[in-house]
Amino acid sequence: FLSEVMRSFAKKAGVEQHWTTAYIHYPNGTVEVVNKALKSLFQALISELRWNKEDWPWLLKAIEHAINHRPKKRLGWKAPVTVHTGLKSDNPLELIFKKPGENLGNCQMTT
Image (cartoon, rainbow, N blue to C red; front, top):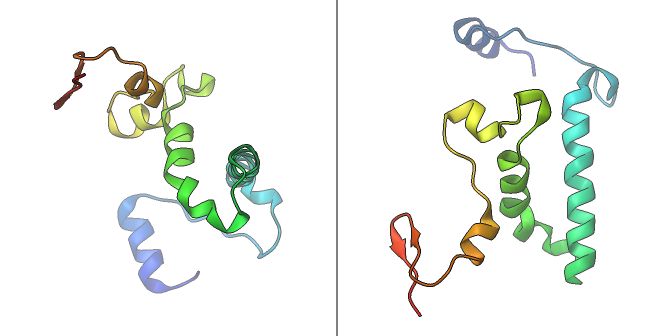
């Protein structure tokens, strides 16, 4: 998308625009790696859960969370959410396997 508005925004934000040709994936390696991971995760979960392919939007938040909260070697074993926001990454399984009565932040689990 090429416009004066985007050019001005990029300049003010200190972002260098990178133009690519449509349908040519080579210049967008990082994006393509993420897209490949997303596709693989969607296919695996839909198959495992025995869901219809049309139900993929229901999995989006869980997959997004998994990708953004998983520590990465290239980030010094920090999660993207930590690097970009300073927030501590969490593991959703910790919520499932907490003992009754353990503190879960703003709520208490009870039996």
